[in-house]
Length: 421
Image (cartoon, rainbow, N blue to C red; front, top):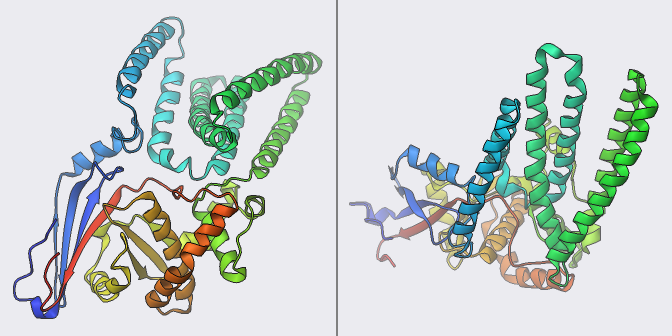
C-alpha cells in the first residue's frame, strides 16, 4: 500500500515502514505506519488493543494460518467433535466431585497452548523432555497429597495442571517426531504401532508396579526410594531417547550450527553430528539467560515489530536499504542483535533465507561495526551452495521451524527525483 509523501521533506529523503499482523500471508491486517525523514518521525496506529488480544486468543484454538491452512471439512468435524466431547465432560461432572481439579487442568492446557503452541514444533526435542518432566511432577503431587490433607485440593490441582502441560506438549511433539520417522509416508502406521508399543509397556509396567507395591506395602521409605529411583531412571531414559534423534528439519539452533561449520570448512555436518551439538535441556537455556550468555542464533530476532522502530532505526534502515532491494526482508543491526523484519508477501523460503542472512550479519558485526555490505556479498556468493549441500545431506530446506511470525512489514522509500513504485 502506498504511503503519502511527507510534505517538504523530499530533498532530504524518507522511508516508510508499515506493520502488519497475522499468521498467514493471506490474512493480514495493518496495525501501524511509521514514516521518517532526516529530521522527524511520524507514526499512526490502526485497530484496537482489544481486537489484537482477541486475535491472539483465537490463535490458541485454531491452527496457524486458519482458515487457509486447513481443509474445508476441518470446521464441521471439529464442531461436532467438540460437541460430543462437551457431552462427555458434562456426564463426567455428574459422577465426580473433582470439578476444580479437572477445570484447572483444562485451563492449564489452554494457557500452555496460548503461550507455547507455535514453539513446540521448532523445539520438539526440548519440549519432549519438558512433557515427561511435568508428568513426573504430576505423579509426585499425587504421592504427596495424602500427606497434607488440609491442602489436598490445591495439591491435586497442581498435579492436574502439570499433566495438562504434558498432554499438550507430548501430543504436539509426538506429531512432529512421527513426521520425522515416516520416510515412506507411513505416519499413520507409525503412530498406530507406537500406540501398540505403549500399550505393551503399560501392561508390563502395571504388572511390575503391582508387584513392587505389594513388596513395599507399609514401608513409606521404601515407597519413596522406589519412586524417586524410577523417576531418575525415567528422565535419564527420556534424555537418551531424545539425544538419539537426528532431525533433518531446520530450526534456529540447527541452522546456526550448520552455518558456522560451513563457513569454516565449506561443508555441512550430517544430522547425527548436529544432534550431538544441540542443547536440549530446558534448564540450560534458563541458566544461560541468568548469566547473560547467548548462543549465536539468540542474537537474531525473527519477525520483529515495525512499531518498535525509533527515528534512529528508521534512518539506519534508509541507509542500508540498498542491500535488501530484491529481498522480502530487512535487517536492522542494533545493540549487538539483528532484528529481522519480514515482508508481508514473504514465503517460507524467504523466512529461512532471512534468518541465515541475520546469522551471517551477526557473526560479521561482533567487532562492533555494521557489515551489511559484506553480509550481502556472502549471501550472493555462498547461500545457494549452502542450501544445495544441505539438501544433499538430507535436510529439509523448504522452511525454518520457528515461532509463529505474526508481525510482518511493508516498506517504501524515496529521495529527490525518486518515485513511489
